[in-house]
Amino acid sequence: MIDEIDQRLVEALLADSRLSLKELAARVGLSSPSVSERVRRLEERGVIRGFTIDIDPATLGYPLQAIVRIRPLPGKLHIVQKMIEDMPEFGECDKVTGEDCYIARLYFRSMSQLDGLLDQIVDKAETNTSIVKSKPIPRRPPPLRAV
Image 1 (tube, rainbow, N blue to C red):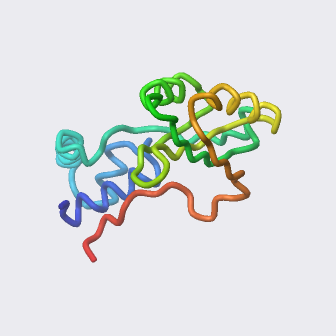
Image 2 (tube, rainbow, N blue to C red):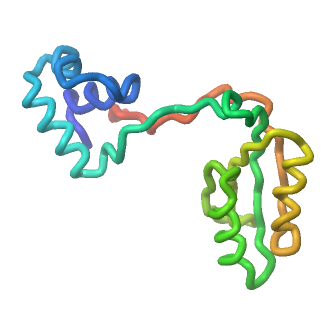
């Protein structure tokens, strides 16, 4: 668990990870050295794993996204996982329980590109693909405050 000040620090950094220590300190009512120490401790504890940017895939020429459920054929699990890891169009992938082994997000430029990407694994896995129409809830962290 994190205390209220750490919660406010994390919330501020989630909104803008480029905030200066001075600005963070002003937002939580502490000195810059105190804020620096708290952020360092949050990193050491693994609460903060990194500072990143958010890129719009469409601006890089990837206007389409798909969610792909992947069920490797018997004996092909590690081969399929390696293929997914090596294909940069797979933006993220979760290994899951249930009938499928993986649920992945795929970025692509056209339906023909999607076909070509999936054709690379069709002899090693069954896939079920859903095209993403919109993202009503963007990626977000778990609740920071205890319920």
